[in-house]
Length: 218
Image 1 (cartoon, rainbow, N blue to C red):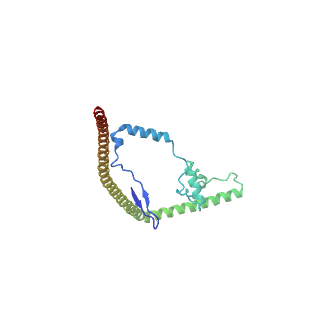
Image 2: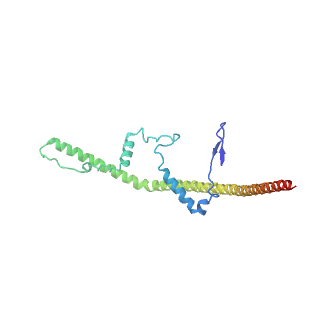
């Protein structure tokens, strides 16, 4: 059991279990069966959360596109198929229709500009891509290393906390065992004294009766 002080308020008491000391469940398996039966009898926890638990935040509240994508992924819906007609050059259905030829020509020009853009992007990627990728990998490795170091520090901190808990509980367990043994000895002494008092009362009653008998005989 420990206490935590919040500013000027009264220290709040934190009740901690003593798993390093209380090992009755391991020593007496029947106790574990009784505990399991009691836990099964209690049923499931209430569906409502604790009042101090904050409500679930709404993700991407200011971005409808990302919110719709999150909803799609949550509902396990597939992405809509790509529109492949953008990358095709269909001929006009009616060869005598000038408007269809104009639309086909516009589409061909758009496809040509798209291919030019792809060539430019590929040239830029070939020129600057390797170094950009190396820098990206270097940053990722540095981030991963920092995360691993933070994880190792947390593991060491957790080990230290568990070690302190074990030492603290072992020390308290020794005191509890000593106090329990002392309590048992005191209870035993009290019982012995009570038994001795009962024996003395019986002996006093016998002597009183004997005194009365002797007085009557005289």
